[in-house]
Length: 313
Length: 301
Image (cartoon, rainbow over all chains, first blue to last red; front, side):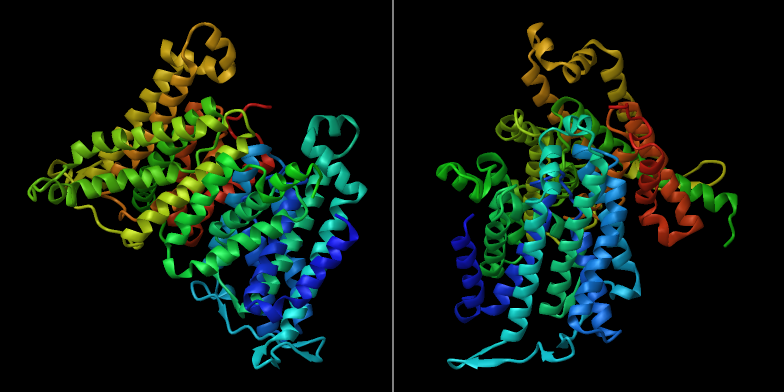
């Protein structure tokens, strides 16, 4: 991707709230960051984690608690949530990388289920009700994230939007730097041929674990930010449905492409908000999309586009 | 808490009752994994379908056929549900899974995950998530039996016995008969087995169908015990995945024994420290990963 494409994307992000409903945009940014974080594992390391909701949802609970009950400022709350997700990622990752391939997916799913059970049972998370009414607070103790501006007669919560956009850009940048660093090259080497990476002297497990921790941390940052946007941390965020959804976003957009997760998150989030009237049929639609995608469309949007344009995206 | 022999034994027996479900389902997963090399995420949904075939056969099939007095009874459901779901499985394998054989195994997992969402989603739309009761438990199986140390519900005893019979006959067929030797050879080297003139694709289809039928059979057995609900499968499948990670999918007997043992451990945990009973299997999985990462019956890769 060249410089102009980046400038175009950032401009799009800056102008979006004037055109699109800002809450939709913020939800999209959170899920896009989540999918980008997930893609670091599936797309660039070849590891399918089926438990990423544990980091996304886990961090949203921590941030919710820190902001609501400990009175921390939002940026510290998000930092706390992200650190927690990194720590949890270290624990889950250390266990999961002991198995490969399909077992890796099952282990992550089962470990995430422990987190789900804990979230269901402890008072810390509010159980079935979740944490409600999480305050957005003052950024750095100065900027009111609740402030609404009137632009052309429309009320817009621009402070919150630009904060979320900044968090997203930070996350995107961290992930992009990781992928395009020598470290990222080793990850791709592991994805392509693990035994060869081992024979070249790389400590493959350490690389996998590091990738897992970074991915978990960024997924956590996405979840933490989401808890401020919706002022809610709930069981849905830690459930296996959410883990599946992020897999779908990445798959649909294009596994192992830079912009794929963005496109995938856009598709799934739009689908969900457009079809909110169909109620639980949405599960059927999501499932159907999975099936169609796997059968006909394994490269995803960006992968197919890249093939047509004969270049990497 | 008083840890009397009776309370422990009764919980362990009830745990064994759960254990046979884990055993049948993880056995099905292992059989499918052996030949198709995919993790069948839709297994839980097929189990749920089995229970619904029994329930709907009893309550709705008669009115649907215009004969309000007709009810599909329990014994018929035990045959019909596995057949229906087995055929569905054959359809899934023929139309979808077959196309994925030359791709990464993870696609099989993702496809079956999508199918699980579809099936669960459809049932969530038409049925109560909190579940419906299946009242067609046959009269012969009402009441309790005296086991010497406790009174045990007759129906649950029947479930344990018939499940063990099904599990061990499956084991026998796969490990001790000629048909089973073809299956095992197909697991090792499908190309070579094809070269001997054995119809491997047909064998794969039937294996998947059998795995699906097993799940449905477990579903019918479960219907009178648990309430029949659209989420019964997804709750079950994640636990069964943990069971499979603990046991390793390489061995049929391993899958059966691990399933039974973990059910009993879960039952025992209910007596000792009840809040941990829903997570104990996952915690054991963590321990196994730390001590013997390949699983209790897994082979070194």
